[in-house]
Image (cartoon, rainbow, N blue to C red):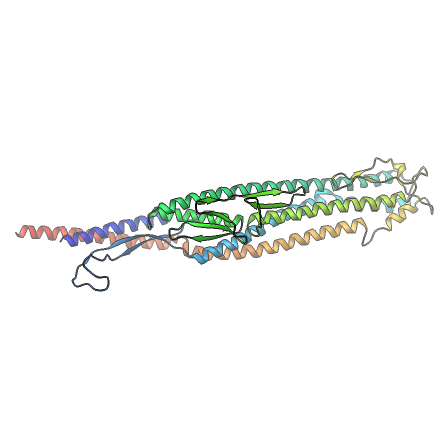
Length: 441
């Protein structure tokens, strides 16, 4: 009867733990990073019996082996890899969209100003002495200069914003490295198969998910679940052997970003940090091209205006001053100083300026520049969409193994409840049988 009591007790204990495990699953069904758990049970082997042969019929109840997590290592690794690519593409796209907005006519009015400048020049060919048209021509010049300054200012602030975002992300990355080392310490001390170990493994995987979305990392695992983390590609040690090596970011004068670890250069090709680096490079290129266009436009229009004479017969003065987009300024000219005339007549210079319109004129070149930015943004958008689809598919495959299915848990809850009740009934039967035996003596 003691055997029957022991069997019943082992069943009560096991199914009580099983019910608690199912309860944990249900309670954490919406907890990010939680992997479904299950209680592993086995038939115990008595000391006098071989695992391969038992000489006597000696039932021994059930034994709890521990709590295991429903995970697939390959699916997890694939999900992290695709997540890093998706974060890189999405981060880059976000900033390229802002660049496109900063260069748009709605933000700076450069295209409208150039169009108005040439349109007013055409109107002056018919009425070169019209003071109102001369004023409108100078106003258009000022709008173009103001537009370049506005665009330059927006790109400058954007470059600072990317640098700030990179610094913040690096700080988060380093904090996650420190947290991962603390999890490693906990895993080395945790009892295998315990609920505490399962919780630590969940937190380890959550941290690895975050780190993978920020930068490329490569993880190797010990038998106790602790992890050694290295940078993808370079193999630089980030976490391992009780050591944590933080990374750093530096912004150059033009806003380009560079990463390092222990003072040595670190190349990051995936994750949000890679996206920020690519965005910083793009903004730096745009700032450089904007300066080049501003200087070129100013030189081209200044030369065209200086080729004529103003209303007082003086040589045309420069329309613009400045050596970059940020410093481009309209010269302080009066309407009488608009050089509409040349040697051929009172409107000759305006005719020559209007004839500049074509494939290489400032208006067409600016439109081409906008088209190039729009194409770059469209390409980034397509890459981000493809990467997101890939990441969503990998995450769904991972969740198919790890996520909690409430219908399944409800069925398990009922099944374990019935088993618990049966185990309790076993103990009751053992007690009743024992009492019957005692009464018969």
